[in-house]
Length: 74
Image 1 (tube, helix red, strand yellow):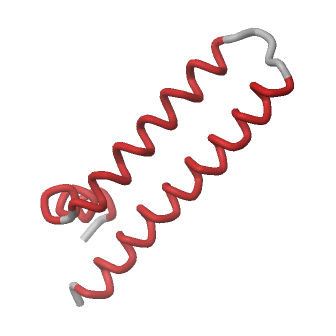
Image 2 (tube, rainbow, N blue to C red):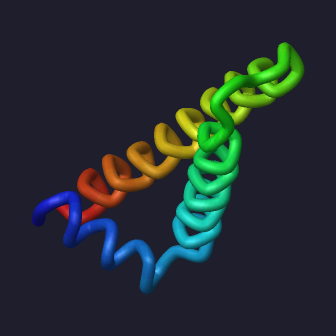
């Protein structure tokens, strides 16, 4: 089973996966708003870096759920 198929199955079956995807989407949209500005204040740059780290952490959690699904479906 391919990762995209697993992600689709997890969307149907796993509420945590859906919540993580929503969080990832929200963080991505927030970053896009910040990145539209030509210049960033020091606080905005700190916020941007923090959001990037949060987004990466969520992405890692999504990937871990996919790996776990693969292991459990063998």
